[in-house]
Every structure is written in C-alpha cells, then in structure tokens.
Amino acid sequence: MRNRGHVYLNGRIVPAHEAAISPFDVGLLRGYAVFDLLQTVGGKPFQLEGHLERFRNSASLLGLQVPLPDDEITRIILELLELNDYDESIVRMVLTGGESDDGMHFDPATPTFLIITHELFTVPEESYRSGTKLVTFEHRRELPQAKTTNYLTWLRNHSMLEQENAIDLLYHADGYVSEAATASFYVVRNGRIHAPDTGVLCGTVGTMVLDHAASEFEVVRGPVTLEDALGADEAFITSSVRGVVPIVQIDDSVIGDGTVGPVTTSLMTICRGAMQAE
Picture 1 (tube, rainbow, N blue to C red):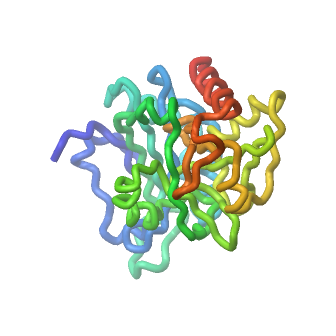
Picture 2: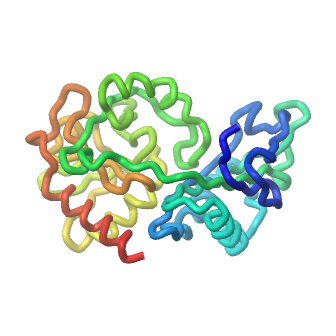
Picture 3: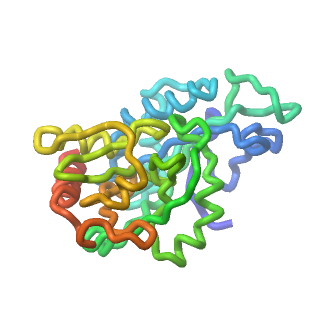
C-alpha cells in the first residue's frame, strides 16, 4: 500500500496503513456519515473555525455527536500536518454513526471519528483565466444542509464530466438551481450577485467572499431559476479548495459573452487577498 502518512482515528494518531474501521460501521453499511474539508494556506489551516462550525452543524442534523472539543481537534490537525509534511494540504474530517450490530441502530455517543490529510490538488490556472463549464443534472440532495459523505450522483457521472471537459455538475429541480455537486453556485445579473438560499449547503469560501464584497456589490439571496442561470451575465462557483472559479458555459449555453466578467474577476481578487492575509 502506498504510504499515506499518519491519520487520526478514534483517539489515536496512527500510521495510515494501521488504521482500521469496523466492517460493522454504519457509515460503511448505510452511508450514515458527515464530513468537512479545508485547505492549508502557508501550511496553516484556512477558515478552520468556520469548517468546525459547519462540521458540528452537519453532525447535529444527523443526530451525531462530535466527540472532541474544537481546541483538541485543532491540536490533532496541526500534529497531522507536521507529521505528514506536505507543502500544502487538504484536511478532511469524517464522522460516522459508529458500529451497528444490525446495520440499522447505533449509539450516537460512540461515533467513528477520522481525520486525514493529503496533498492539496490544484485547479489549472487556465480555469481562472478563461473560465470553465458546468453540466446540468436534475437532482435534489437529501438533507442538503448537511455535508454528508453521499457523493453517489457526482461519482457516477464523473467520467461524463471529463468527456464534457466540465468542472462539475449543476443540480436543479422543479426549474430552480441549487448548487454544484462539489461547490456553491452563484450568478450575476445586472451587477447583482444572486445566491440560491434554499436546499443548499452553506459554503465557507462563498460566505467569506460575499461578506467581503458586500460594500461593492448587492447580494440577493433567494431562488434562482435554471433560466436565470442560463441567461446570466456571469456565473461562478466557490469551494474550499478552489476558491472562486468563473463559469462561462452551462451545457451548450454560453454565459454572458463567454469570457470572465468583471464581477467574478473582482471576487477572485477578493478571495486571493483574503487567503494571502491569513
């Protein structure tokens, strides 16, 4: 097995090849699990406080209990980053319902808690300069306010995205868009930023960028139709490991004039500035 450094699992930091999760874990048997992830900037966790808050919220929505306080989780993450020693890392926290004798019932007070780090992947710079593409997919995530480990729809369609040279799926249902499969989605119309606010997961980077941009741009939170998205002046996605990425095409529809627009350009600058300030 390829060396994957060290991980934290249920009270101990161990070499990854020694970590073992029970075959009776309800996260494995039933997919009953939540996670959150973040990247490092300059080797330090970026927006850790916000990610821990979202992680706890996701756990609460599934009736799970995060077994450690934030300061202890922070200490473990810093130790893992030092042990695994990547230039820049992704930190992933995973919480499952723990062991289940019958695959149905579990004790929320004894979950499985895993923290791993691995090398940060990078988005090609061309995606930021020239923009990229989304492919629409009719789908509504179950319990969308929780960041669960269920990525079945995205994984099943990943090869199609590669064929389409698209960065992600854009979920929509009943004529309204919600979010991309692995990112938050926004459109710009007449200089206003429109943010879907129903049936979506709160994005840490998206929230940060829009908060910083509030003095310069009007942000409208509410329903966004698929027609609004296809006819937008600009569109962009945000995620914890990509920042702000411009979208210049959705399916066969060109967004705006097909180039990265001024609002998105400004938001990319805001995002990079905030990251450099950390």
